[in-house]
Amino acid sequence: MLEFLTQNEVLLHFFNRYGYYIGSFYPREHYNSGWLILKQAEHYLDQEKRLDLARRFVRGAIGNMERVLEYYLRRGVAELRAILEQLELIAAALEAQDSPEALMAIEGNVREVYYGAFDLILKQEEFSFAKRTRRPPQNRLNALISFGNSLLYVAALSEIYRTHLDPRIGFLHTTNFRRFSLNLDVAEVFKPILVDRLIFSLVNKGQLKAEHFSEGVEGIFLTEAGRKIFVQEWEEKLRTTIDHAQLKRKVSYRRLIRLDLYKLEKHLLGDRPYEPYLAGW
Image (cartoon, rainbow, N blue to C red):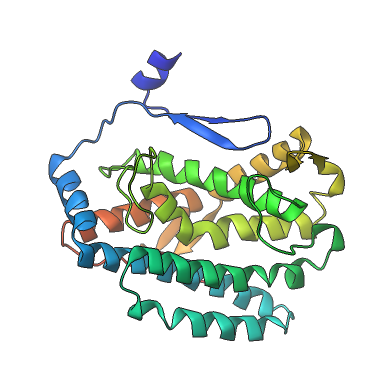
């Protein structure tokens, strides 16, 4: 089977029984570019170049968080205006940061404020947020966020495989002994508009309910039925097409991820500065 997947350039991702991502079978690269890998490593080793890219990823993540909040503000959730103002105040400190770790801290502070909007958008006690908890998630909303983020990580990894980029060299997330880090960088940009918007839709439409979760000593997780609902809607989301302002045609959300990777390639080669995708709605 692994030989078949390699011949057909198919990635295989593994999750444990709780829905945690545990690893991938990554076939040999078929779009090798020694020159681009050298440029990618150069941008990681050069502190100024790495900082520039890391800052762009964080700016993109914050920009899409703001787009999500503005969307629900227009739909009558007036309390979101104060949260948007808080985001702007924290984001103003981005330019002053002098290390990727400091940028990660800013992004973490912004996301903490941003998560404070979830209860305002959902307005359902059984999906109250309280605070972000991981491994294990301590409530239903955290379980949804963790599962959705893991699906986005592997989607980004699969799209990286279709480019000349090396997934082991990230810029915002430190490259170390873990297998991949670039997919984590790219995922930061798309979490708000793919994962978070999908969660709001599934909960507000009643597609996911308390009965779709199980609670044990390990924490709270989606049941098999709950994961099936989430994955089906996730795949449908990635297939959904939107009008792309620059390309003047419709593209799927999955394609948007790869287009961002192509923009990153151009940045590394010195053709055009990377500007992360920002939702247009």
